[in-house]
Length: 359
Image 1 (tube, rainbow, N blue to C red):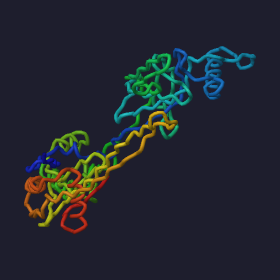
Image 2 (tube, helix red, strand yellow):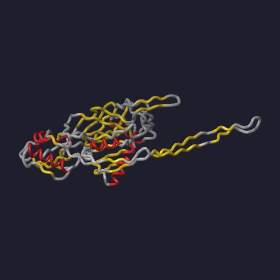
Image 3 (tube, rainbow, N blue to C red):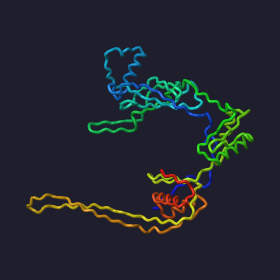
Image 4 (cartoon, rainbow, N blue to C red):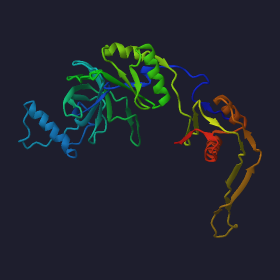
């Protein structure tokens, strides 16, 4: 059965909205992190004799709540507490009192965080300021079953999630167009795409307000314009993005993805297959009757090597479209593994007019 190669895009290029392929300068997420305690575990928390930081954190928290045990000769033995790292992403334009999702991960030797409750944990950004506070019940989406001689675990029980578990305490100001100019950053840098965006902005928003600074950046002049309204109108404009001629090959899975602009010059291809078959046929040798010998196994190996010469020399002709290229390679009866080897050889020959990326 012949294997087919999949094209990355149809023959006719589609138009996309500008806001789907660019980022706006200053509009970005912020990463938050905090350290806290999860309580209420069913004996699956940290062992306080091994994880000193969990014990010290628990003692410090109890002291702040008015329970002084630091000066007492008490050996804490609870296994229902775990030290965790709490991470979250603060979206742009978040306001005080808003809610964000948080992720909780064990840092000690806790075995399972299922059913635990995260205590109030401040979440800091890279500047050291607290931007949110997290608290709530964890959901791990994991389960485990243990028997006398075996156990099974699905998913990761030491990492949990709290939906809307963080409350925003501090806003990150975003000043759109504070300098009079805002930059649009392309996800995939390309001079052609950047120029098309600038042209459509100048055509529909205002003549001469957009210019291309580099393959990734388009500068838009917002002088005497409302930034939010202008960016709203720019985001809904549509263009036809340009794509680079590129072939991506994943050797592990045998996947080949080709862009619409990939071309191959006319080449002749012959692909032969070498098959080696190794067969083990051990023989059992019995001792003679009434002898003192023992039964033995004598190994026997048979090796056959054959070459499949059914693949003749074929010509892969240059085609004007990706569809013709795919049809030509499928017509030669190539499997995915053969295609990968042949594409690498064609690239080495100089007939592949595209970048080849092997993963």
